[in-house]
Length: 442
Image (cartoon, rainbow, N blue to C red):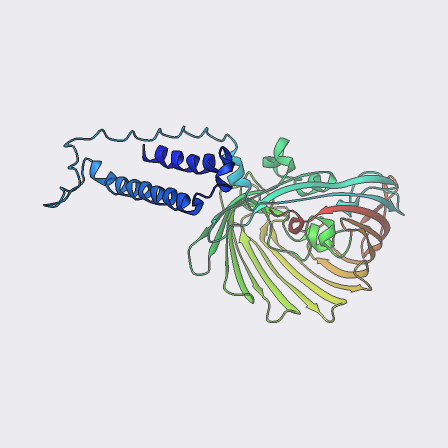
């Protein structure tokens, strides 16, 4: 009611001016009338303030009024305020799990095709350049698509799922019964966990590429378009099993593996292969990686061991000139094919000069001594020289043109349908579309 009286008083003030404008013309003291109305308004405000000060006393838990107080006592009971209505439950998000898995992931991929020419025009039989074996035709080398997440301290679970299609996948999976069917297209597939040990011990389980070698399956990550003799004759391509890596600092990292063997998801015996890889980077320009693998690799034979010792050295002479060297030694303690021990050894030297960020020229020379025919199925000495020109056509597109010459001290290279010779000349023009992980990370 007090608020109503205030409104009435205010209305009276306006009506006094609007309805009776003659008041301004009369001799009556208008100022006195306004002062009276202001006094009435002040009294109404005081009454409203007093009524508000008495409101807490109406609560059920209000304290008793002190003796002599003129404030009316609160009733003994009070109706409790109604509880606010509960908010409706949020509907479950069916994509929450997928979103969680994809958070922080990187997408990578490539499309790699080429035109190859072999001056020997080989027809079937021995293939001496497995990754670029096409002659006088266009060929699909590799289509690759991968999704990966690197484990971190605040998110210790990670993964890598990389699929591949093309001739390169046929070469990589040759001889592995576990890679038949759909597994033929699985280049890598493993789970990762960053264990809280020191700076973090990363543990991987599944199929992953080998830690050995100066080159990799993807041609765009190598300096040459074709692969070296050492890459496809003296080292494995991949393993299936466990891998653990500990990075001590930016100069030292150690990796250990315990796997089924060389290039096998499905083991060919019940033995296991172990290995160590030590990566050293004393300076930003110089790095060395030493690898050692040992284990039984022959079919249904757990006692005879294969040893691989390798070292890869990289040196950046200048921002434009880079050098690399690779040395491999393989030994089979008892090769079932000959009934005695067998070994092979090889070295490769690389050089790359970047004229600009888009144009580079690379060279490779290598020598392989397959002393017992363990690597190539023929006891021989092989040499190879390759010259590769690279041009980055666009941000994601790389083109390469190369010439390669191979020779042996034996008639190893097929000519035509049935003859063999001691040398082989090949050329290739490749085009690679690359989607880099750094460009897609969320």
